[in-house]
Image (cartoon, rainbow, N blue to C red; front, side, top):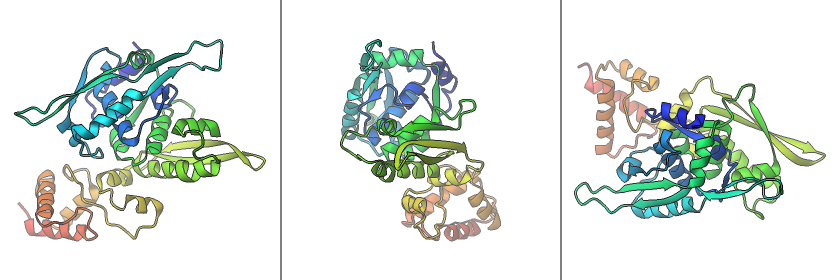
Length: 339
């Protein structure tokens, strides 16, 4: 058994991370890169399988569990069906067909999937799938992996961001490596850009690379920089470097907050925006909201105050990312007072 499945098995109870074989993360094997929604589903499927991803067994998840995941769409069986079809069409290839000395193997990511009928009692739908033999063999042999923050992947809004993030994440923990140089053709392959689309590097840089790096820097634990390398006046390659953020708090706050206005904040075109109140969970690990609560003289349980405040806002039609949400929360805590 390869090390990748061992690492995935060891992290079976960590629902915040997904262990992805580096071969998949770097796109070494994958052709016909799917859409953003299908990529997110692929990550969820591999994360659900965990240490059993190389086993020829049926994996399953309930539709209701998918709907609970922040950053995933509010899927139905009808919306998931074409995504499974996309993943069924993903081709995994091992070997260079241009090299006559190499053996070339072609297979698939997915064998088949079943989207069951709605349960008449619970109203839920069970989704199940078998990975393809090619993926099973690749996962079984894999000794390199990427550990990805699930919430980052699920909140990214572009498939180019996901493809670049998973590739870089597979390199982050390698010793003495803090950057990688890609030729322009390699970049095009990484992003799955078809021939005839974004012909010039300037187009790739403007429409694909820069937006992906900007979004990754906003929503992940990493900060990426890209440096073009020229031969004469022509960009021949790009070096992408990375470093881990010293303070992840702004990223965590952005992930918890509402997506509305996120692009404007990323591009620096938004006015000063108040942080959104967390959509789920308590505020024990949210220093900003905890400080406001304490300053208001409230000592109510941190989970309970958060739940009560969300209900208070919901009943009055107040958005959790309203411009005055901090004052509303402070006033609410003042009224609740000491318990």
